[in-house]
Length: 122
Image (tube, rainbow, N blue to C red; front, side):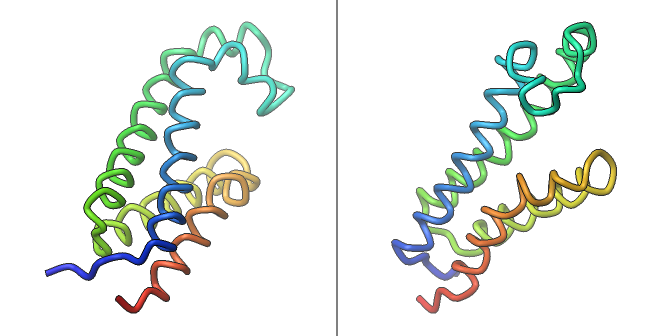
């Protein structure tokens, strides 16, 4: 049986989950309008030509968010560890393959939440 999460851990998990859903929404619905705010070097033509790729990536971020939401709702410590580790791994992969800043921008909140969750003794 899985350990249960404290309220503070659930709050930290909820913040990381919200970040996943926010990124997913931007990639799926707002890529052409918001993409150049992420990286001003991305042209309108580039954003238009990569819209379906971004939506696909957004779908995966939404799936990660769904795992986070499940973990928070069920207060499931083990699923929370899996979720946060997966998000951190995705941020590290993005940093290695796209831009080093991805780790800071998308990995900081999940890493902090993981620290809170690992410190949870319930």
